[in-house]
Length: 77
Image (cartoon, rainbow, N blue to C red; front, side):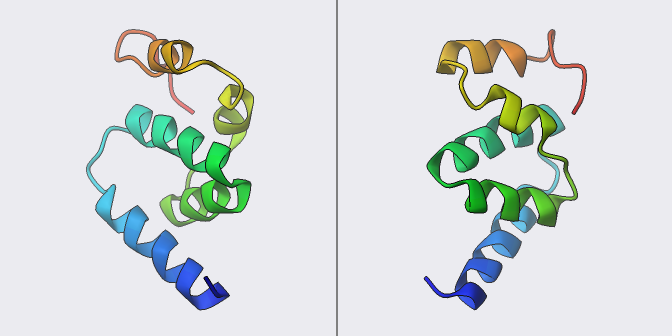
């Protein structure tokens, strides 16, 4: 995938995530980041979100990530 294709992917994903709760966006960004840090960072930039929680939570198990981003536990990123 060339740079312009990556840019279009980041834009399309960010647009598709509009209206999704922030805690779910962060959860998904962790998955994107784990697949490829450039991918996670690119989508986060288009969403206007920081990567602090994303990089900190990249080593969590899926169960731990779900707990951190649950409605009850999530405090914002």
